[in-house]
Amino acid sequence: MENTAEEKIVKKPPFRKTILLIVLAIIIYLLLIIWAKKLQMISTFPWVGVNVQDLVWYVDSSLEFEEINFIDSDWYNINWLYVWTWKGKTVYYFHWNWWPLNYFYSEIKYINELWYNVISYDYPWYWKSEWYPYKNNVDRFSKEFYEYIKKEKGISDEDLIVWWYSIWTAVATDFASKNTFDKLILVSPLSSRYDMSNYIFWFPLQKYLFVSDSYKTKKLVQNFNNSVLIIHWNNDKIVPFWQWKKVFDNYSWEKNFIEIDNFWHNYIIDTYWESLKNIFKKHLKWEKLWFIDNYFFIWAKEKHDLEFENRIDLFDDYSIQKFVSAKVPFWNKSYKPFELDKIGSDFIYDTKWWSQILRKEANDALQKMWESFYNAFDKKLSVVSAYRSYSYQKWIKDRWCPDNLCAKAWYSEHQSWLAIDIFEASTNKIWMWNSNLKSYYDWMNENAHTYWFHNTYQKWLDIDTYEIEPWHWRFIWIELATYLKNNNITIAEYYNKKN
Image (tube, rainbow, N blue to C red; front, side, top):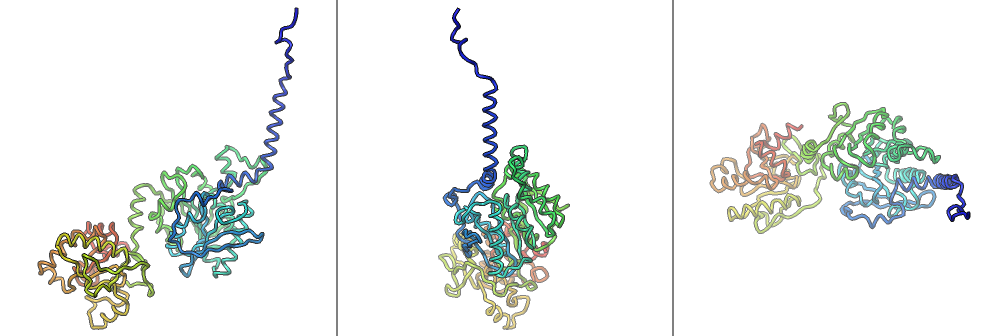
């Protein structure tokens, strides 16, 4: 009998397919070993080779800085910026790795407005910087530029603050381990690359590709003797939340931790801008934080309360809430705000012939308030006095004006560019007896807080340090003005309580 077609087919040995799969796996494994370093670099810095500048949809153009194109020892260009505003400490800012440097101008401006100079650079292959961001390149760039800028700008190691974000906490930790510095801020810190692999692959992949563990923040911080503030959010899907604990536990010096509730990873400063401001200030000035057991938890209500408190700055001369009294002066003798406007308009009469000036934000609010006032009384606001210079205030005081009525130079709210005297600066008795002035005051007392204004002197000398002045109003911020109104207290009472 003839064999069927099926019987004529010669069957391949079953182990051949297995051998092919093993050979293929070995080839892939060898290729992974060969390319392991580059693959690790690409996974860490995902925008390598992409024109990330085209991906940036928002850039804060108001930041003023010096741009430096620095040529390193291997003749590669690294693009840097330097923001020099104050004599004092400088923050070395390592931004997170998803965007080029110009995307972080708003964060750099935020740090600068905390009264610190800032240096930062675009990582290799990002925007204007060259070469690849391998660890040895990044470490070299960080070190070489710092040595250059330290010499050029006269920065001392003791005045250096290192501020790190995400994967760059590891880069900056490596930099800090080889340099002297003052303080640290770690935002969403990476504990090590092996730890990240354990999180992603459930095992340290690099170890089996013969790539050693790197960016070992948890190990390097063991030798630091500087105060550190660590911030991490408990829903972080990029750098898992547990990694902060490894860094924190290994840190042997003064340390504080902030846990942020239900936040994923990026945009910490954009989202918690006001909430963290005073915490940053206290930490950077070596002031003791109020945390219990070095731990602080920020959730929705805590964030709201912190934002209210942190928007109030009664001490900085540039602040719109700056508190000045007969006992508290301006500290900066050369103080002058950035944007100023003349006060005249269709609803405001300047008794000094269109020459009086306020800070722009105060003048904008004043225009809106007095349009409403005009609609209520069909009468223009008459501004008797707005900004007064040091010399003018001194001239007023030198005319034998008593302390209960006139401030000494540098002790007057009028020198803040935020205060005005309206209609008639006479006495409280005249204002309360004059029906027109009384009606103007009643309207202001009822409505001014909604336009961010506050009547500073309402409760006599013992509290406000001056006599009652119903004509004197100052710009102060709507939430604080509303708070003072609702609680029937003056800014002096609030200052004394807060202080």
